[in-house]
Structure formats: structure tokens, C-alpha cells
Image (cartoon, rainbow, N blue to C red; front, top):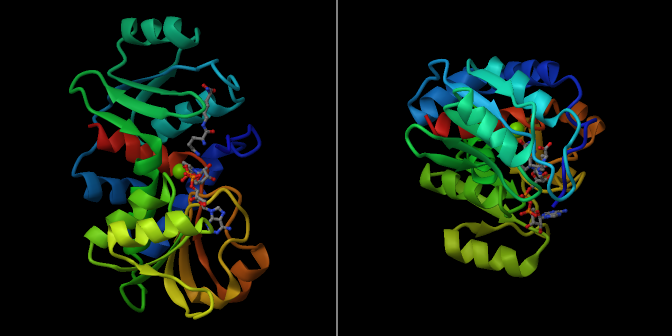
Length: 259
Ligand code: NAD
Ligand code: 2YG
Ligand code: MG
């Protein structure tokens, strides 16, 4: 799995503000507004304990610090523990944390200790980016192209199907693509039969995965995938509304889902 780098997380507050402006232009609501509508909950100053984890590839510079900024941005009262791992977990609970946020190389979770709800970053990220895409106010139809059907893309695609969208799926892994098309009852997107979309949801770890022939003027590309799904040049050429941010939108989705 591709891990975040400290550089991805530089200026997280500014990245969040920029993403918020785009989400507002695209949906008419800010990220908080979309989360509130989607989950039917609002934070009430729940105390969040952020526990750094040293296992595997170890602590990522800016990761816990960014989670601190993000949680406060969305109205939670949060703190990063001084100790990592089990000692940090103990410290978080002893200091009154109601929600624990922590990640190793495979799992990033939010656990609400009061109501027992637990969330995983991948499906929560997929659903919220798909939800934002689905709310595009200027969409020309209910057709959506989904590029990347893995741990983030699959739950996003499933969410769009449940919302009544016509989902066209594409993944470079042919076996996974065929299985997903059959499991979700979506349409297999064939690059040999090109067409344009006003809503695109992308979730791959690769760059430039959205080809020019699918991009319509002023389309939305809602993409948690890092690095970016399209070049700056194509973004400007077609006036693409790009919803892309490395950590905050997915974390907000996790936190709202455990309230
Ligand atoms: P994954 O490996 O489970 O799935 C990725 C899928 O993309 C795979 O099925 C793969 O076959 C497909 N793929 C790769 N290259 C492709 C291409 N050129 N065209 C079409 N499909 C292609 O990974 P994941 O856990 O779903 O994560 C996807 C991306 O989202 C990663 O970059 C991850 O770091 C990122 N992510 C971002 C956030 C966020 O908050 N922004 C949160 C979680 C994950
Ligand atoms: O506590 C730490 O600093 C580290 N143990 C965090 C490790 C996180 C690893 N996960 C990732 O880099 C991401 N693929 C998942 C984070 C979701 C946002 N992109
Ligand atoms: Mg995110």
C-alpha cells in the first residue's frame, strides 16, 4: 500500500480550506455540511485522542499533527498523546478521550469508546468522495465514471449504485474489474468505446489515470487517490472541479460515522 509522506501533509489547514471551497462550489455545502447530511450527526466537542503508532514503517512526520489540525477544524476537541502505541492508548483513555484515532501501515481507525462504533478509513473515504461527486449541482446526467475499484473505490462505487447512479467502472486489473462489474451490477467502461462524463470518482495510487477523452468541460473529479488523477494542464484546459485532499475529508467521514 502507498503510504502518505510528510510532504503530502504540508499545510494541511490550507489544503483543507481549498478543498472546502471546491466542495462548496460543487455541492452548495461545505465538507461539514455534506457529512452532517450524509451521517445525520453533528459533533458536540467529543474529545478525540490521537495515538502515534510506531509499528511497520513507523511514525509518519506530520501525520498525528495533521490529524490534530483536522479534528479541530471539524469541531472536535483533540489531543496527540506524548507516548506512542499501547502506552499512548492508555494515556488517551486516562485523559478522557471518547474517540481514538490511530493508524498502522494497513489500518487507520476511529473508535468511539462510548457507543462502540468503529470506522475504517478506506470505506469511509470512498463513500464521502463518492457522495461529494454525486452531489454535483451542474451534473448533466446520473452517469458516473469510477476509476479504481480497490479498498477505497469499491465502497464508493457501491454507494453510487445505492444512490441510483449509472456507474461505469474501470480498473487496470481485468479480473478484479470483471468481478466487481458482476458483483455490483455496474457497466464495464471500455476505453475502446470512449465517452465523456460530468462526474468522475477516482481512487488509484497512480498519476494521470483519467484520460482526456472522458473529461467533459467543467466536470467534477472527486479523487482521494494520490498522486493526482489528471495533469494540471488538463485540469485548466477543461475547467475541471478537482476535489482532492490527502487526509482530512476521509478523516471527517470516519469521525462523523462513529458519532
Ligand atoms: P487499492 O490498492 O486497494 O486499490 C487501487 C486500485 O486501483 C486497484 O484495484 C488497482 O488495480 C487500481 N489501479 C491502479 N492503477 C490504475 C490505473 N492506471 N487505472 C485504473 N485502475 C488502476 O488502494 P486503495 O486502498 O483503494 O487506495 C487508493 C488510493 O487512495 C491510494 O492512493 C491511497 O493512498 C489513497 N487514499 C487516500 C485517502 C485520502 O484521504 N485522500 C484515504 C485513503 C486512501
Ligand atoms: O502513527 C503514525 O504516524 C503512522 N503509524 C501512520 C501510518 C499511516 C499509514 N497509512 C497511510 O499512509 C494511508 N495510506 C492511509 C491514511 C489515509 C489518508 N490517505
Ligand atoms: Mg481525505
